[in-house]
Amino acid sequence: MNKLTTDFVIHQYQSGIESYSKFTTEVGLWASEQYVFEKYLKKTDKILDIGCGTGRTTFHLFRLGYEQITGVDFTPEMIAEATALNENYQLNITFKEGDARNLEYKDQEFDSVIFSFNGMMSIPNSTQRKKALNEINRVLKGAGMFIFTTHDREKDANYFDFWKEQKQIWSEGRQDPKLYEFGDIITDSKNEERQIYIHIPNQEEINNFLQEGGFEVIETFYRNDKFEESEKVKEKSGECRFWVVRKR
Ligand SMILES: C[S@@+](CC[C@H](N)C(=O)[O-])C[C@H]1O[C@@H](n2cnc3c(N)ncnc32)[C@H](O)[C@@H]1O
Image (tube, rainbow, N blue to C red):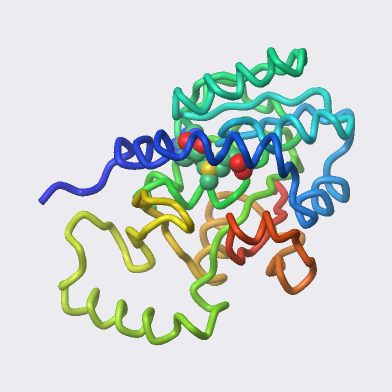
């Protein structure tokens, strides 16, 4: 059986446009996002918002005064919706189709990069995620900040048995052959009838990933330990770990 590819991922997001658009127009930034962005990004920063989707973080950062922001996403329908909203809001933000693994920007073009709402972990295959991280490193200036989130296998005790079983399944080679590595899952979306692929790491995995990719961790925390998000945010997005990291 063939391994899962980015076509599966693009398809998973194509079927979620309406819901992401509502999240953009009705919800905006999470309290946790606003905290990290305002703490670590300067209003004058040139920011690349990778996996911007329909522009939720892009528009709301712009409104907070981060006007040098560009949104890129590899799902054409996401960019089409972000562009339509941009026209509606009469803003002049640049939204472009683009793949995190092969960015069209020059070396050191950005002061900071964000990849919000666990988007980076929806890139199948650790080699491909490393490619994306190398690209982010390349387009960032020296000491530039990169902010992203992941789920975490070690957070929710309700899933410890699930992960124990998964470990056994992978060690015996009984895993879904479409998947690449332990931590990969294909699951039903929260509240929506669509299947999604996501890689769920633990903290050690991401620490190594960042170390090898040339980043140092500045701050990391579980969202719900520090913030009480609105019901609308919690309804669409489960617990995650924030990573604030700096190019070494
Ligand atoms: C969970 S959605 C988040 C969208 C938006 N940032 C938000 O918070 O509402 C993740 C987004 O990442 C995009 N994405 C995933 N892999 C990507 C890649 N390799 N390059 C660019 N975009 C990617 C998807 O198309 C999707 O729009």
